[in-house]
Amino acid sequence: MTLLVDIKAQLGAFSLDVQFAAPSGVTALFGPSGCGKSSVINAIAGLIRPDQGQIISASRPLFDAAARVNLPPHRRRMGVIFQDTRLFPHLSVQQNLTYGCWFAGKLRKGPSLQDVTDLLGISHLLHRRPASLSGGEAARVAIGRALLSAPDMILADEPLAALDEARRAEILPYFIALRDAALVPMIYVSHSVAEVAGLATTVVAMGDGRVIAIGSVDDIFGRSDVMGANAITLLPARIVGHHSDGLSELATEAGQIFVPQMSADIGTSHMLRINSGDVILARSEPNTSALNILRGEICSVGAQRGGAVMIDLRAGNATIRARITQRSCASMGLDIGQTCFAIVKSLSLARGEDR
Amino acid sequence: MTDAANWLGPEEWQAVRVSLQVAAWAIFVSLPLALLTAYALARWSFWGKSLLNGIVHLPLILPPVVTGYILLRVFGRRGVLGVWLEQTFGIVLSFHWTGAALAAAVMAFPLTVRAIRLSIEAIDRRTEQSAATLGAAPVWVFATITLPLALPGIIAGAILGFAKALGEFGATITFVGAIPGQTQTIPSAIYVFLQSPDGGQGALRLVILAIVIAMTALFASEWMARHAAAWARGA
Image (cartoon, rainbow over all chains, first blue to last red; front, side, top):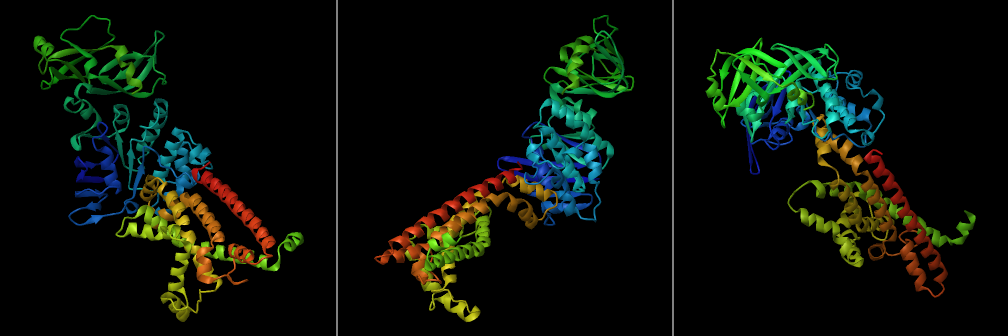
């Protein structure tokens, strides 16, 4: 286990009581604003001191209330990427990037400046000052600066929240590249389903200072007790064709799916998000205007919540989640093992590409 | 140079030289202490903080003659610290230019501390936190982040203090008198000129010179602080 967090802290009127373990890869701390995600990051980085518990990184205790261990931030080896970048205004981009290298010394070998600037596409900015950078450029420099300090772990605190939609789409791929390069494990704080769905390997769902659930992205985002009415299905897909009538064809584990024209090239993989509320179920093969009809077998019928139930449909090797009313469920007599058809309107998938 | 040199008499030139020497030493020696005091007041919380703040600002509020009198009692030949300094280090302050530098430093101290303190308080502490997460120990955070970002305030404080030290009169004349070539600065030379019936011309020349020096210091301070601020902002 790369990082173990088990802390309690009273921060004014807000109480934080969080336990989770982060394996290698990207662990997302996911939850609404004000649920204590950033406080957890600050506690791991050593910027706030919890009242009780322990934080252990790579079998090194960073904080242990019982053993009276509380390492100062500069000895924790946590590369923090702050939402507001916090670049040093009086230093050049290159000096910002190499600031941490110097303190890491020769003992801890991090990636080279060349590798990092190539990965992030910032080689041409080295002699500029932070004040002259655009939001997206500053965000990339902040990522590079954290990486180059040769940390045991990267802590990214809502790194895209201050950016506009276009910049977010520009920066997220760098985080994905970082994950795939497997340079260093990462904790990624976000309230955005799109960011977490595209990036995380493990999700720690938080609410009101507590951990609600821990699991894979697909598992957490499909749970109605975590996501409520916003529970979704994540379906890995590959673009197999762009049709002249304005639709793109995707191949998925559940079958072929049509979505409004996508900009990416044929062969590109894409994480399709299907809102559970946008899925209609039918007992017999329907004859409707909908293009996407996925045949499957009901593998679970969830508990009733606010007049709605969550039905999981096993289609091919994928599970499609449908959130339907309690009334429909009862009148259709839905039960585990029945064959069912899930209908997904193509146009309802249009949102999938942005957020 | 010869014209200007002839424009002022030898005694007047002496006063200018003493003034510059006294003010320069006053700032040179007190600046590190002012920086420490400003940092402590801006960042630390400790018992007696308001008291320290009061003591630092005291010379600004007290009549200068009172400050001079206190210096005389403490650092004079028979003062507690005066005796100790003379016996231990052979340093004599009273009626000596070093004493004039001490008086100038004490009087300039509140202005210097105030300017530096404001610039330290204006630094975003989160910038310093991010340096700490990158592995910088507190002393390195101070040297590489706090100090450079406070530089505009440090320059402004030093020049303001220098100008104040040049113009200091009351505490200086009380503590060290006005000995030509030793403790007679521009203000005390003007005062001495005005005491003699035919000193009007000499006083006027020194008054003009004092205005020129003050304006130059002010413009230099503005210019340097502006450039340092632009540099710290990264423009």
